[in-house]
Image 1 (tube, rainbow, N blue to C red):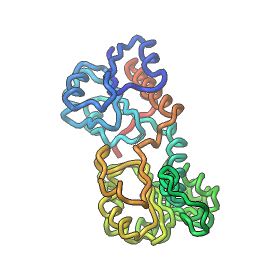
Image 2: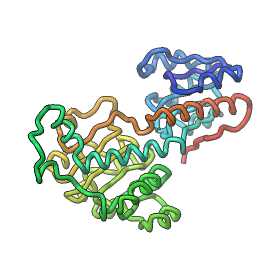
Image 3: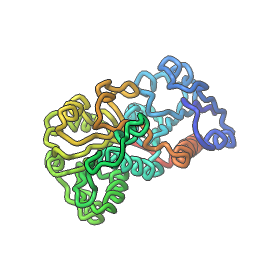
Length: 319
Ligand code: GLV
């Protein structure tokens, strides 16, 4: 059996596969694999470990001659045509749960960085522009008594709400369905997206990307946000219509925005770099030693299961 891994992984995933008699080939370069390289390398693979940076569409799937499983090393799987893969009897798996805490921690870091203007403060220190303490210097926003709007009350949304609640905030949420556990735990009420945006001081986005959530935050509803509000996105860039958010930030119609993900990443809108009221991170939500190792190892477990005729641990299906 052969497995192709599109990017060098962290942890023991490769050893786990090899210990199960699986031949492993890893793309050797430290960059995203090109489509041509992907097509060439996966042809005779029995399993693939892919990253969310590779588009695995019908054409790629049609190119697979013996593949039984595509193990995506991410919780999001919008890069894969899951329905088509399943039709071809190829299992698709993701890495839920294990990255929830790391992503929630980073989300809170972004919220605080935006609310307390950490970027401006840090820049001032590095540029040797600090002339001393001033009562009115870099005034930010406090968390206590603020309303946090969680957009997408799944696992990560829940973990963010738990952290934010400990700051003395009130939690509200938007989701397709009522989440009773979420409501009970945080005394949280569900609102429509527009109603949430009108009420929240902090908006945190945790939806999976699909046809229904693409640009779900857009020109029409973003403008309803409060003047002193903060929005952060650690899910997928395409959920927010970035151009419209940039306009609001430019005109200071909202306080700040924190980005870990971007539309069209890794290329980012150059306007973003010019703004003082944004905090920009390079898609590092799950980037801890512990989490990235666990993600890779879960991919290996899924592959081992499927290639030995068993069910995968964390399969995904189209909703
Ligand atoms: C990363 O963005 C992931 O979906 O795990």
